[in-house]
Length: 144
Length: 182
Image (cartoon, rainbow over all chains, first blue to last red; front, side, top):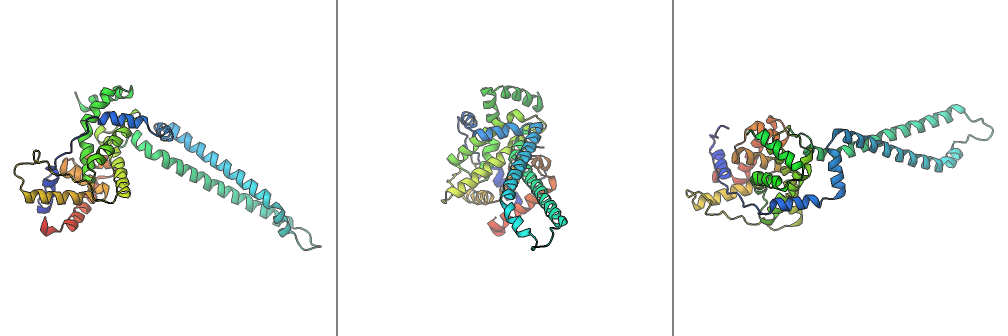
């Protein structure tokens, strides 16, 4: 490192270099090991999972699938509940035939919305798991 | 023995839960961790607690360390995160000023005058007020004389970012201290 020429930098450098170090607690290693043993089980599990890339990928995939399933189930339950209202609203005036195209269009729009929601839920789960495991893996994997 | 060999032997013993090996690791790197904590404004019991947290995180993560990076920079990265969290917690929980960290006259160079000590104190306080990555960059560059490449590894960013961090930190310190006074 080249020595600074700027007087401000020289003072800063001298102040930092000459700063006395605080004395370490004599039982620092023991305390650290006790703390490590007391870690939250969820934290320990996530740290363990984050250590290998394969487990990390599997966790991400599982989280995506699980959230997508939950979302699909919730969507299904909601659509079932609204079915009667939908029929009542969509019924044509008396004497007119129901147009099959509009019913199909409504179905495909529903499917499209469901697919979109599933994709979004999957992305959310992936990002969430990545954030949870990614922070830990930066400790566990190669940081450089 | 090279540092890499030394590290691999330590790691083998550490993975098997060897307390003595972990004790050696703590002894070897505690100064690095404590000095960073000090530069982030932690002192006394807060600093001891935070240092213990850092080494607990190191202990938990050691099984996954494969030695691709220098152990020193790897520990430093853990230290920055853990100590920054400790500092945030401390600032959130308490409002009184940080515990006084008097200059130990037995450790201070004999050339120090009272004005020098006062001036240094103001500089250290100003560094403690910086954003954590800026404080870490100042600490590593000026206190430990690490090369930029090494600092970049420790902070997990390109060398250019380290230069920017140092430049901004210096500008901020100039602003806080007032150039004429330093």
